[in-house]
Image (cartoon, rainbow, N blue to C red):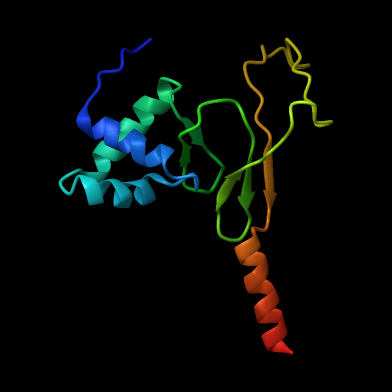
Amino acid sequence: MKQLRKTHQREIILEELCANPTHPTADELYERVRRRLPRVSLATVYRNLEILSDLGIIQKIETAGRQKRYDGNPERHHHIRCLHCGRVDDVDMAEDSEFEIKMPERSRHGFRVMDVKVDFSGICPDCEKEARASRSNAH
């Protein structure tokens, strides 16, 4: 396992990510970090997000056809993505929720199962509000 060397830039990137509940993209996080570190490069932000993700300190949220987003909460939890704007939020699920996945040791195709991810999708409140407003303006 890689050893994490603390750097000032890495600490600021992690602080900004953890202070941002919106699961930002690297570009969005870069804009926030630049307010505190004006000389930081986008490549530095990307590189550090990959390192932090590889070490399990943060989560990388990947969806086909979309930019990666990052979550400062490394604990296992689910996310919901807006189909319109791409916003990502945590899904609040109680531990005793009826939603349960039983991970088999092996798949029917012989794969050893290492992880399961469940993606929820829908329309966020802002996009739903915008859609209602445009429908009422059309009438």
